[in-house]
Amino acid sequence: MDRQEAIEFLMDHYENPRNSGPLEHADVSLTGGNPGCADIITMHARFDKEGKLEAVNWEGEGCTISRAAASYVTEITPGKTADEIEQMSFEDLIEQLGRELVMTRPTCATLALGTLKKGVHEYHMHQRAEDARYPALSDESTTPSTSS
Image (tube, rainbow, N blue to C red; front, side, top):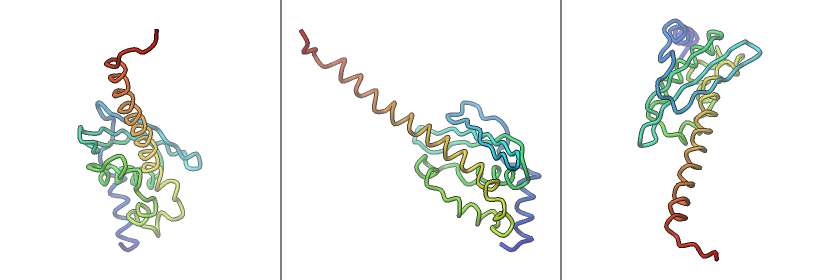
């Protein structure tokens, strides 16, 4: 996209934010910040039974780039698994947002995705721990005790 298209794209997401606001029954709610620009973005996410991102919302304040990027991230992540979100590239996001415009503010451009990735990673690790714990508990309850 050329410079003018990138400006229009960012301004559209800034002026008409997608998926902005709290999210009921969120599995992930994590706040990230960019002290250099006073950006604060909270990402909320909910996964379905198949482990795919069912809904993602954001809340926060900040510059045009961070808010537009948060809106855009909520459009490109639904349907992805935790692993797929964790593997998303910051470089690809910068390209999609318009490298020429956001390359001087990469922290602003990647705040929402970075926050979502961190929250999803923590959620994913918690889910793995829960999945590993339950089989062990059920094995212990059905295995006869060998202690005397």
